Structures are given as structure tokens and as C-alpha cells.
Image (cartoon, rainbow, N blue to C red):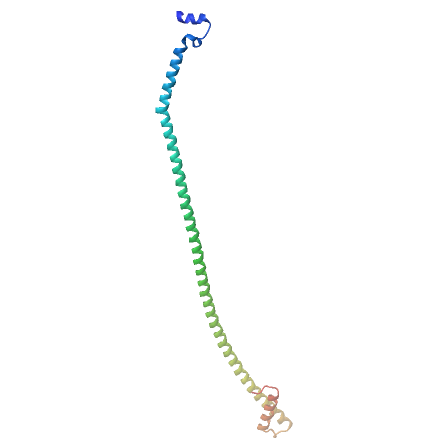
Length: 180
């Protein structure tokens, strides 16, 4: 069932919003809606949005400040680390030098002891060699004297003079550098 007001508009052949008779009330209600909307936005919603944006801006600034502070602390920690590393390398070098010097001193001491022992053994060996040579020379002289006496006895029995034979053997050994 149709109402008389809607039938009039429908018969007029247009939309009721475009009817110039209703424009002043429509403009009033649109203006009232815009004013109310503006009031709600400016008093309630916009301050909240502004507060949120300001809080975000402060949070970002605080985060940037904290990041800057952490960066400075990290750089200081890195410098401290680098200094500690350099100090540790220097100490390690000093310890290595000290150990190298201690080892060299021990090697030098052992070398001196070894050289002294070698010198003592060499002297002892030379002494023994000298004694053996002297003994060999005495033995060679005795053998040479006995051999010469035996030859002289065979060639001229009874004419072997001990002193003459010993002198001749001494002279022959001295010429060859054997007598001592």
C-alpha cells in the first residue's frame, strides 16, 4: 500500500533529494551533521590521534637516543677490547722474550758445562794417549835394543855392549822423531 506523500513524489518523476522545496531542510541537516562531526573529530578523535602520533614520535626519539647511547657504549667497549688485546699481545711478547732469554741462558749454561766436560775428557784422553805413546816408545826402544843385541850377537858373538847398542837405538829413534 502506498502512502499519499510517496505517491506524490513518485508521480512527480524524480528523486525527493532533488526537489528544491526540501533543500533548505536538507542543507540544515547536512550542516548540523558536519558541525557535529567536526566537533566530535576536533574534540575527541583528533586529540587522541595527535596524542598517539606524539607518543610515537617520543618513542621513536627515545629509541634513537637509546640506539645512539648504545652505539657510543659499543664503540667504547670495542676500544677497550682493542686496548686489552694490544696489552695482551704486548704481555705475550714480553713473556715470550723472557722465556726465550731463560731458555737461551739454560742452553748457554748447558753448552758451557758440555764444553768443560768435553775439554776435561779431551785432556784425559790426550793424557792417556801420551802415556800410551810413552809406553809404546819405551817398549819400542826395549824391542829395538833387544833386536839390535840379538843381531850383534849373531854377527859378532860376545861383542854386544849394552851401552853402545842403547845409544845407537836412541840415535836412530831420535832421527825418526820417535824417541821422547
